Length: 232
Image (spheres, rainbow, N blue to C red):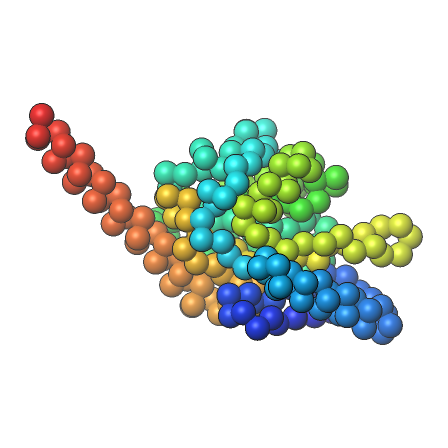
């Protein structure tokens, strides 16, 4: 597999990955097409892969690989992480999930309740059973989410994720997509993100920071409730 990194001038955008093997002319055409698309997006203010300030920009409802209905409003109240990908991704998606699993182990008990949501960009092929099989190697903290195309589109828009179907030989297709793990706090705000090429120690500190801020927020909330109770 050959990965092509495309950097954009805005510092919040890390890169977009080509997750398929193409010939020489195909690669050149793909780079030109993607570059023009990115230029158009930059002029419209919608940069591919740029993390939003909050997930409240849109409400979406998806199904977990275990059959549970999960919507963006119900996800609030505790921090979580989100990655968009697809199970037939040659390497990037599985490598990212493996790294997230490793990060959760290194954080330890503090990450016991932290969920990592893997939202598929390929609902046509990624059924609940397919997601379960794909994620089974990464531990119970990583939950697969799928659903109707329109709900996937809402989730994509909420996080401003870049993705594009790319036809391949024999009528098949692969998917270009952002390779970011979005870190979301208890209020539904995207406070940071981990990129595909992030150093493990740097990513670990980001995850610990997310959980530390949540712990402090919970402590302040408990104190406020205690003060209110004494007031009555």
